[in-house]
Image 1 (cartoon, rainbow, N blue to C red):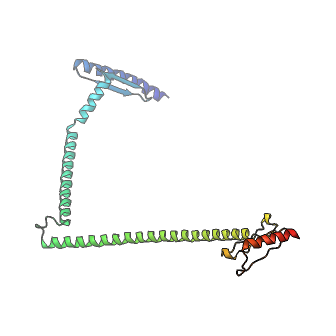
Image 2: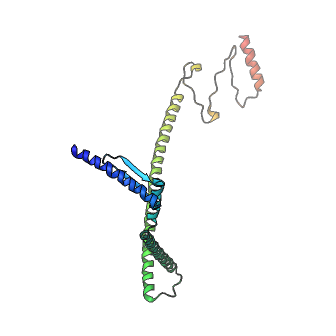
Image 3: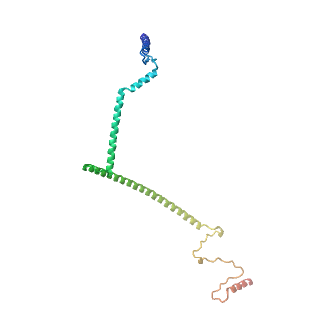
Length: 235
């Protein structure tokens, strides 16, 4: 405890003396002085002949404009210039290679360079054919898959049509055998295919008999009908 008290007393004396010397330096020498002190407890003490903030900003500007930093910036600039030159040369080489692959500017090439170019073109052609074959196989597989789907749909439609036809036939047979309510409970008579085969319905006769005359009869039909009429009423 006594040790800390002694340190605090010593700090106060030295701090005051240091602040006095800084003030005297700024006044006697016309210098820009800034002083910052932190105690052991974290307390801040400062002195500035003009302004501590302005003095610190000036210090930072001077540090950034240090000759050492200038040399570093110059070296970085040279490195970037070299990188740009390297990329430019690579770009020109790629353009020249592209023209060669297209069959242009082949005059300056030597026999070995032409052979290497031929090998590159053959390799590229093989890869292009392989890719083409792969794409064609994929397309064929897709078409087969669609064909199978359409075949399944066609089978389902056939089954539906057959079921509907069976239903219609069953309904038609039910209607054909259904009794007619206005015909005394007898089944419905289906007309014959030939209209000449239809049997005549019986005719209600009152008071006379129906006589049929042959084709060879000499009496006319009207007279036969009249005689039958009178005979019937005379009975």
